[in-house]
Amino acid sequence: MSGNFPENTESLFFELAGDLRLQMIVKLSYNKYRLSQLATELNATMQEAHRNITRLVDSGLVFKDGEGDLGLTSYGKSIVYLLPGYEFLSTNKQYFLEHSIEELPLKFIQRIGSLKKSEIIIGVMANLQRWKKLYSNSEVYIKEIMSQVPLDLIEMLSLKIQTGVKFSYILAKDTIIPRGRTEILERIGWSNMISRGLVERKMLPQIRIMTIFNEKESCLLFPNLKGQPDLNIMFYSQDTDFHEWCEDFFNFQWESAGPFDEKKLFET
Image 1 (spheres, rainbow, N blue to C red):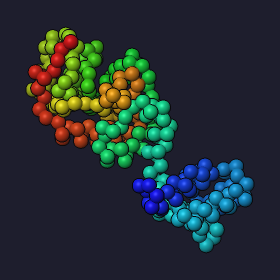
Image 2 (cartoon, helix red, strand yellow):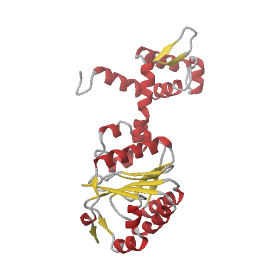
Image 3 (cartoon, rainbow, N blue to C red):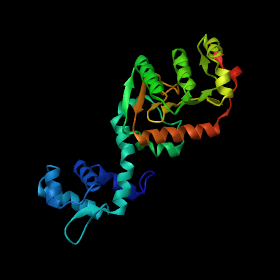
Image 4 (tube, rainbow, N blue to C red):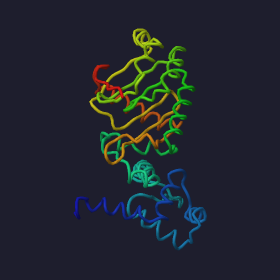
């Protein structure tokens, strides 16, 4: 035991730290290979390939069958399944130096690799435009966890709701709403939409992580290091794994949320 990590864990990270070895196990997660084929695919010499594959075999990640084909062991496959989380975080290293995932329940951190097929949208206006497009493309539902209420999206949202799109949202009890929101909601008949079951809403004590998604597109925003949601930069995706992560997170928060209380909101 060294530090807080068992020796086996340190050994595993050491094996994965080799660039060629990491490429090898990723390749072998798709197909079996002969050593010569693997060396050619990875532009490595036979000597390099042999040395590195021997280490992977010795570590239990790779096996060699009776015909000389190389493949991943069950243990090796299990390790590869966990790599997308590291890939997502390392690809977005600069973002996560400035933003926190500490507010996430551990089970969502452990699934963070589901977010890897996404793009970063930068700029408040660019993000608002993407939200508008998401609203426009919605045919079944829109779900949101929001810490702020963009005033210019309310009427567009109401038009989608009137076509039968169901809207479910969670706000924080300390949400500051823009002046004029109450009048707009009265004019578009928001209370009627709620009574008809087209709009459902709940409240949380606070919101740090925001998500907006419909049946096929998803947006996700993490807080800055001060714990404040950052509307200037967000992840956007049409990937099903990304969507499932957002939907599960929404459902988790929905179960924790309490009744909606309009009096808790503050108008600026």
